Amino acid sequence: MSMLGTGPDRLAEDRSPAGELTRFVALGDSLTEGVGDAVGEAWRGWAAVLARSLAPGGRDVEFTNLAYSGALSSELTTRQLPAALALRPQLAAVVVGGNDTLRAGFDIRRTTLELDATLGELSGHGAVLLTACLPDPGTLLRLPAPLARPLARRMRAVNTVVHALSVRHRAIHLHLAELPWLEERRLLSVDRLHPSAEGHHLIARRFHALLAEAGHPLGAPPATAPAEPPPSPAADLWWMATQGTRWVVARSTDLLPGLLALAAAESAARLRGASSRHDEQMARAAAQALASLG
Image (tube, rainbow, N blue to C red; front, side, top):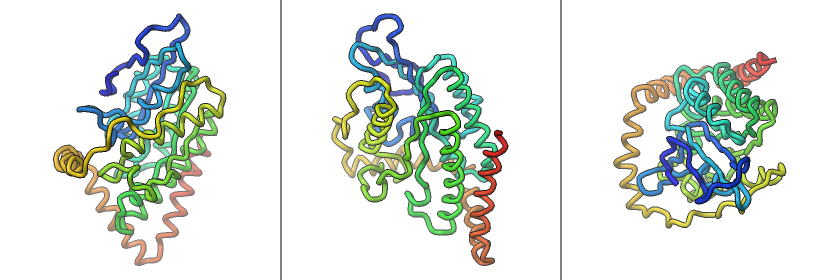
C-alpha cells in the first residue's frame, strides 16, 4: 500500500464482488496527510490506519488521501473537493482549519463557508462524513501568552464552527481536541504539533469506535500502537534538523510575520484590558458566520 497520498490504495489483495468496494477519501492538511507517522520515506497517518479497518472480511477498501501539508480551508473547494467527488466516496474525512488560525488574514466567515460547501457537496453525493475539532496549537507548543491567547481564540472559533457543521451535515464527529495530548507526551511527535505514530493510531481507533456506534459494518479495530518501534531520540532530532527545519523555513515568509503581528496586537490589547472583548468579538463572529448559512 502506497503512503504517498496521491492516489487510490487498494487495501485487499483480491477484488471483491461487484458492489462490495468501499471508497474512502481523506481531505485536509498535514494532520490527515500523516505527518508524525513515518513509514520509510513517506507518511502513513490516522486515515490510512483507519482505512485498513473499515470493511468486514471479503470486502475491498479503496483509500485516497488528498490531504497535504499547509492546506487551508479555502483550498478544500478549489483543489481537494473536485478530486474527492470524482472518486464517488462512500466515506469522506474532512479535518482542516488549523492552518487558517496561523494566517494573518484569518476570517472565520470564509472558513465557515468553505467547510460548509465541502461537507454539503460530499454528503449530497452520498458520503458519510468524518469530522474532528482540533487542539489549540499554542497550548501544544507551549507558546507565550501574547501568542497563545489569540491562537486559542481563533481555534475556539473554528471548533465552534466545526461542531455546528457536523450537526448540520450529520457527520460522525471526533472530539479530537479533548484527547490527552499534553498528559501523554508520547502521543505527540517531536515537533509537538502533530501526533506521533501512536497518536495517529489513537485517532484511528476513536473514529473506528464512533463508526461502530453508528452501526457501520467494519473490520477489526486498528491496533493500539503501530507494529513498528517508535523512532529513537536521535532519529527524532535528525528529522527536526533536516525535514522539520525545512518546514519552518518554508512557512516563515507567510506564517511568522502574521504570528508576530498577532502577538503585538494581543500585547497592546492586554495593556488596554481589551483581551476579553476580543474573545467576545471572535465568538460573535463565529455565531454570525453560522447564522448566515440559514
